[in-house]
Amino acid sequence: MLDSLPEQSSLRESDLWVCSSCIGDTFLKEKINEIGKIQKCFFCNTTDHSITIDELADDAVHAFERCAHPCNSPADKEAGVSPEIAVSQLLKSDKRIGEVAFRVLRQKYADYYIKELKWDVFDPSCLYKIAFTFVNMRSAYWDMACCSLKSKSRFFNEEVKKNLESIFKNIPPSALKTVRCDSDYRFFRARIANNEQHVCEILQRPIEQFGPPPLGNIFGGRMNPVGIPVLYTALEEDTALAEVRPHLDATVVIASLTPLRDVTLLDLTALGDYEIDESPFNPHMTEELCRLSFLQEFSKILSRPVNPAIDSIEYLPTQCVADYIANSFKPKVDGFICYSAMQQGGKNVIFFQDSLTIIGDDQPAISNVEFEDAKPWNPEDIDTYIVHYGPEIEQRQLYKEPVLRLINRDITIKKITGISYSYDNNAINWKDYIKP
Ligand SMILES: [Zn+2]
Image 1 (tube, rainbow, N blue to C red):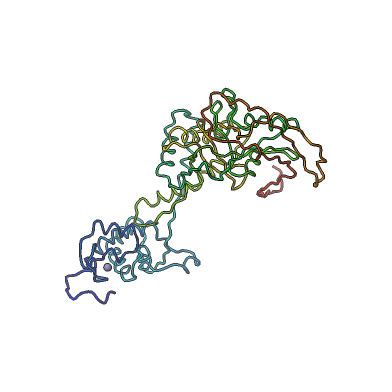
Image 2 (cartoon, rainbow, N blue to C red):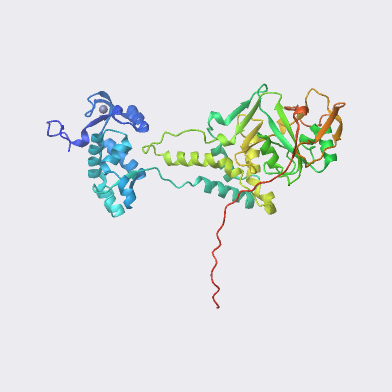
């Protein structure tokens, strides 16, 4: 019990004042500073914004309900604390304040909870641990929206729109990246060459081979429906290589692209790069934690592998996200960054229609390529392509002004000498056959 309660017999514990400085929880502290009265704090004697213990108990009871979990298992009990300590942990306050607040809230609310829940939630002999637990429904809502996109409404889907608006509202500043034209940033694009002749063709006309396909001849993909061009690139050479899924012994030609002007990209892998000041007193905390946890996963959700047999419909959600970023996201961006489905940790950059035109470097385009003989399986010999420059290739019509420059001399050629797989083992549960 409090041993320093003032002499006046009329003063009850519930009437004592507690100031904002005595409460460590930032959400509650701000609330007291906002609504509190200037009073002398009973606990620290400071005159400041204060509320009564009775008011504090009203806040604490909801926080207790949200975050104090009774310890049932022996392991839990070892880490458990008394409800008084639990309340002071919630308040981030001195133990004394927790004790007084707990007594007042028990007096006020115990009967109600016993009646409603049929047990004494504030049983002083029970042990508790403080933790934020929540069931994240955001992923489920997103999955439901994706289902409705596939099977209910494709073009005017309110459910998907609502989800996307909520995902892209108030994104952290770090998710908007500007790649300066004078930076060392490179975007990589790879092509599998079917044979030596094809390598020469790629090297002779790199702009045509690595640039977007002509309008009217656009295949659909993970991030674009049929007919809508985007340019798939990768931030790493290895990711670009993995994205074209080369077979063993394949020859892959990789081009590197550099921005001609500053390029703004929305980084989907950074949507969850912000911190939340967790407070059990904030009534929207669960919602905010769910949102953060969903945003941290969102880019991985988009890079989930899809079944090639049904890929055109499985790509609808990612195509829809890309379409939203291209046409509805503000500020306008040139493209976005997302995780690669093919290379763990690798990142792809998708450039939108207005920002995908490539030009060659200042060197004239290649007109003639000679292949120098070499024994391919002798590691000391390296295949050499001799390149002669010729007249420049005409730029693709209909696309906007170029945003990326392809540096001819940075083109690399890789021969695939090995492929590695990663997998999870699935157990088989064999059962004896029982004759019916
Ligand atoms: Zn105080």
